[in-house]
Length: 94
Image (cartoon, rainbow, N blue to C red; front, top):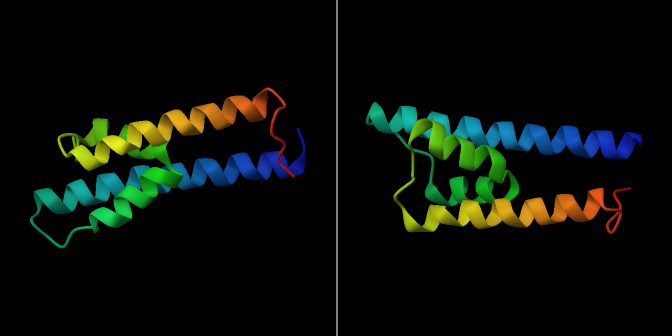
């Protein structure tokens, strides 16, 4: 595996961890009735880090009923398709 591919995987994993943490932090703030992360921010994190967003939604039982957050599942499917294209050699990184 090339250095660029390794770096891309590391950055992708970090983005997803940030997304997961953001959903957990927002749930914590919701329970404490404190200042919350804007929904726009959570949706953007779901777009770039859908694994973390979907895991966070289910793990923390957060934003699972809101229709607009179901887009995270669509984002996840799109990411899986891109990952399959990269793994199949149809798209190259670096």
